[in-house]
Amino acid sequence: MSYLGVGVSPGNVAVYHHGSNLKVIDKRVRLTEVVLRCLICGLALLSALLIGTDVQVKEIFTIQKKAQFTNMKALVFLVVANGITAAYSLAQVLRCVLSMIRGRVLFNKPFAWAIFAGDQVMAYLTLAAVAAAAQSAVLAKLGQTALQWMSICNIYGKFCNQIGEGIASGLLVSLSMIVLSAISAFSLFRLYGDNNRKSNGRW
Amino acid sequence: MSYLGVGVSPGNVAVYHHGSNLKVIDKRVRLTEVVLRCLICGLALLSALLIGTDVQVKEIFTIQKKAQFTNMKALVFLVVANGITAAYSLAQVLRCVLSMIRGRVLFNKPFAWAIFAGDQVMAYLTLAAVAAAAQSAVLAKLGQTALQWMSICNIYGKFCNQIGEGIASGLLVSLSMIVLSAISAFSLFRLYGDNNRKSNGRW
Image 1 (tube, rainbow over the protein chains, first blue to last red):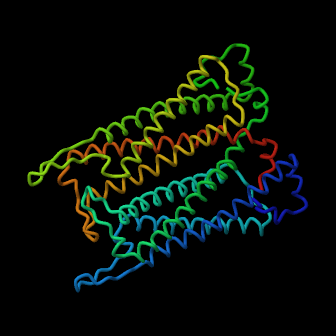
Image 2 (cartoon, each protein chain N blue to C red; image 1 turned 30 degrees about the horizontal axis):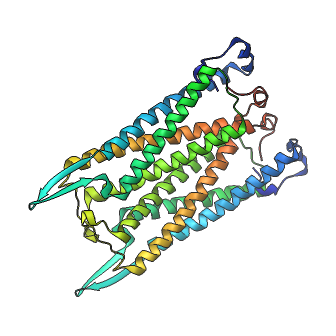
Image 3 (cartoon, helix red, strand yellow; image 1 turned 120 degrees about the horizontal axis):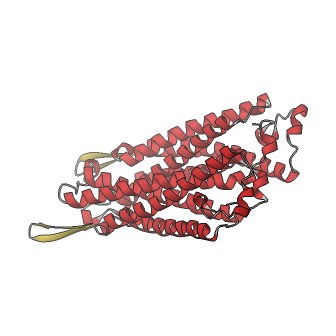
């Protein structure tokens, strides 16, 4: 698959025999895909680093207390999920670059299914991780008086702010993955199209 | 759209001019869709009821304490999300039944886009709600010693068990919605198929 239309050798241009309108849409979809994959890779790394390196030490009644992301399972889950997403996105970007250099990669159904499945898993994984981390963050910020869980952000203000930035970055990763998974669904299921049927209406 | 192949009048059978293999796949996909929508409607209602009606009162040092789902924002979110999902699924099941009775409904692109968008939103909504509720449940079950948040399931055992059943039911709703959103993506994007292109490979 040649993203961005780069690496198209003259002998293969005949593949674009369908309407020029569809050709323009195709190019845009592929451009969006590459941009999103790069964006996701960067943001997932940023989110993992922001949360993973966040440490704050406070002295409370002569006892030193340290706040770090490992204190909350949900934050560990988010760091791991973001790490996996960054590695996955990097591999996908490399695939795109390779296909651009080689000029042509056959886009068959099993390959399209693999990309679709990978993107779906990543979209749901990142969303679940962000939702769990956001829930923990709300509890840490507001506490839960009914359960006598006290807010910890009054004590570890700087720590909480950096975690908040990490979660916001993770949310952007998740939203971008959702768009990307719709794009890969489009790329896969159009291969199952049956144009003749459309004109007769569908059941 | 005639799900289950019911309501096909003889004059319209000609619509099935494509291979019998594809016809069998089509029927199975539609049968799966209807079964999943009914299942989701029932499970979402069950989950909302299990969590929404869960109350346990305990007397601790002569003070009566009541545990209920409104004590945790994540559980309220899950009940609301399940309520919306149940109503949405019921509407979709009614649409399927109506199309079966009428015999034929035109399946055009805007309609397919609406169903696709609705299913996607529901899949991500239910997953986010379940992830947040599961995170709260883990905290309630195990506590978080580093933050001095104590476990509450030692005190409200019966309450916690019922919440756990509600979350498990919500997880099934979420997984079913994920499969369903893939089915509606298939139904939509195949309309954009370009069969001629397949034989030439894809870029």
